[in-house]
Length: 171
Image (cartoon, rainbow, N blue to C red; front, side, top):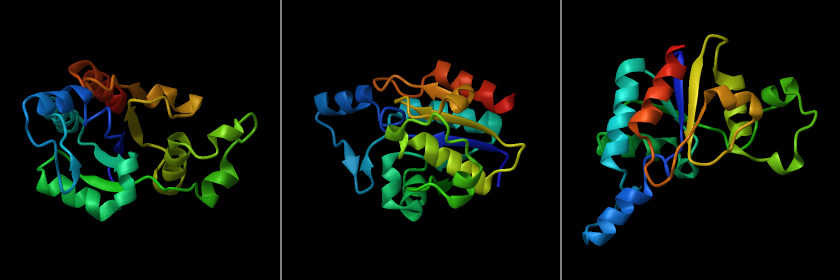
């Protein structure tokens, strides 16, 4: 496993409102058998992040419910940048629960992407891992904030988002 990981959401990050509106107004097809098409500009920014950092991708999007093989197949068929190595778990692991400080944890956060990411890191990562979370919703723990980039769902991954991701992964 790589020592740099991108926890990646799709809707509002790669699948942007801007691009879907463009396709709709142009009367173009907006999806294939894998789902909605991703914004080419967001894809190019993701490609830049990966080219500079050599990070691998862990899908934390709701699209993960299609399964890891489906995500990897879509990546290959659509010739998307980088390598999808995993998806975050749908439930938290015992190893994370045994080491997590649950004091002050809001019960409403009983199932959130922040927990799934923490669980994945607990089960898979070494101490030296650098990671970034790119999502259009604030879905993380406060402790993950230094690794988090909130995107605008209209634009997704922009040049500014890419520059921040590179900075986080290379620090």
